[in-house]
Every structure is written in structure tokens, then in C-alpha cells.
Image (cartoon, rainbow, N blue to C red):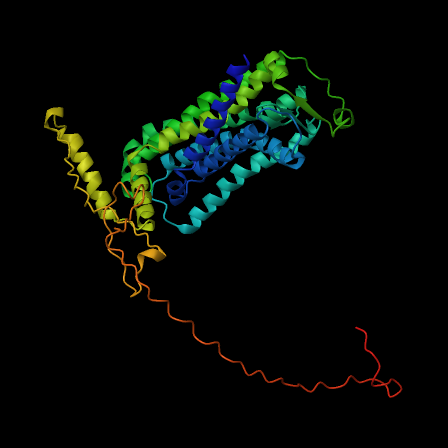
Length: 434
């Protein structure tokens, strides 16, 4: 059981980081399209995946309260993102409905700016309000669960069911209303909508269809999962809410839940798994709809060419390589036609081995020339140089005398040293002790 839990934990860490990376890839072209619903969706899903990855690494095998302030922030961020993602889906449904009901291409920059401000206010305002309402249902500071990290502390009260757990259901119902109105408008004006999309370069039919698919999936998942959460909490013991003074008693407490308790309690285990995989699924779903399209591949190509220019590589060779790859895939030659390139290895130049040079004083004659050397023989042993006895000439010529020693004329130099400045009462002949 321990090994399976460790494996599950490592999988969660890996997918949290992958979700953070993948969901941020389509960010640039959604900013170009002024689509704040998708931008906020990326913001909430990506940030929560990153926080989940960091917390899972820090509290991988412990429940120590390493960073209280960090836990205060991330526990509230979890609340904000759990509401922010459905809110971003609501903004996407609102944008789809707006596209289905307009009659002309919206080109005014002031109108776009106003639309961006409204969407941003809704996408950030609702999560901020939800975090502010958290004070009225918060039991104590936060909890730390091994393998998950910091999590909010909300007792199971009736007030918490209405103020927090039912909030995604409210947002999902509003999104469902927008979806129904959009379908109705699309069937009435589908020809005008196609003409509008053909005139607007920032909105194509494929992108419009993907927005509809994302909003529809979010609606189909948000409402059922919200209802399941309410039903699950109703089966648990309900804490009697008797006011903030009673609810906030011992507010600074931090519950530390190790893995053995987490695995033995199905309610904690299901809550942790739901919080982990819901945000990962949202990130992967967004990338599946917007990160593997033809438009995305064009952006990837531009990014690769920019990186290659940074590295000093030629982008033309990259284009030729891509063209050659497409051509090879199209033709698909049989395996028998494939040839293996032949590499000819040039022989390395050979040089004679170095001749060892070992000179002794006896090898130099009186005239300054080196005596003749012969190959080693039985008389030379292991020496590499052998002087033949027949070439040695014994001479009685004495060595040249040493040069006469030069006489040094050393003349003492007397340097006048000034006398120290001493009082007149001190004798000049007194001994100075240093």
C-alpha cells in the first residue's frame, strides 16, 4: 500500500507540472484575440497546477509547518481557483453568446477595451468575493495533508454548503442559460454567423467550435460534480454553526494529517483526489482543444524559428528539413530502397617512434662534440646508449685551468646619519637601547 501511494503521489507531481506547462502554451494567441475568458481560464488553472506541484514536492513525506504565510496564501488560492475556473467558463459562454447575436464585426478599440474590463472584473471579482466569504465559514487557520500540502479548513456546516460548495453550481447554471441562448441564436442566424467569421480574422469557425466544446464540457462537468460534492458532504457529520466566536475558537491551530490517517479516512482521500485531479483535468482539456490545432502548430513553428535564430542557426535549413520530412512521409518509400550512408575512415599518419636522448658527462668529448653511439648490445644491458670501447681515446691532456679570481676593491662608504632630536640634557655619548 505504501509503494502504491508513493507511485500515485509521483504521478500527481508529474501531471501537475505538465498541466502547468501545457495550459500556458496557447496563452499568446488568446491574448491577441482579446479573449479574456480563455486567458483567465489559463491563469486560474495554470497557477493552481503550479501551486499544487510546489506543495506536493515540499510536503512529499512530512506534515511540518514549514511556511505558515505560504499556506495562508495557497489555501485561499485553492478556494479562488475552484471558483475562478467555472467563472472563466462562464465568460467563454458569454462571449459565444455575444458572437452569435452580433450583426457586424466589432472593430472599435473602445468597445473591446470595455469588454475586456467587464470580463476581467467578473473573472477576478467573483473569486475575490468567494475568498472574502471564506472568513465566515473558516474553522481554523489551515490544514496540512501529507502528499498534498496546505488546504483550507472549512467545517461541514449548512452555511458552508451554500456559501462555498454550491457556488460552482450557481455559476454552472448561468453558463447553461448562456449555452441554451447561444444554441437558439445559432440555429436562427447560422448563415450570418458564418459570414461574420469569414470577415473577422481573429475568429475562425474552428476556434468558435472549440470554444463551444470547452464551454459545453465545463457545464456538463461543473453542475454534476457540484451536486456530488453537496451530497457527499450531507452524508458526513454536520457541525452546528453557532456564530463566529464559536467557529473561530482556537483559530491559530493547524491540523497536520499524515498519510496513514489520510489513507484510512475515505472522506479525506476523496477530497484530496478530487482537488488534485480536477484542476489537472481542466488544464489538459484546455490544451487538447487549443494546443494541437493547425493554428497552434504555426505558432510552434514561429517559436522554433525564433529560438534557432537566437542560437545562430539558419531558419532556411529548418524549413527545408520540414519540407523534406513531409515529402518523405508522403512518398513512403519501401525499406529496401533505403540506403545506409557509407563513411570512409582515413588512415592516421604513422610517425617513427621518438628517439630517446640520454647524454652523460662522459659522452661529451674534450672538443665539445658528442661521441658516436651504437645500438645496445650485450655489454650495454638496459641502457639505450652504448659507447664503444674501441672509440674511446685516452688522453693525458689536462683540463683547462679556472680563471683567476678577480680581486674585489671594496671601499667602505660612510653614510652620514643625522643624530636623533633629543634634549640637551641627554648626553650624546649615552647608549641608546632599542
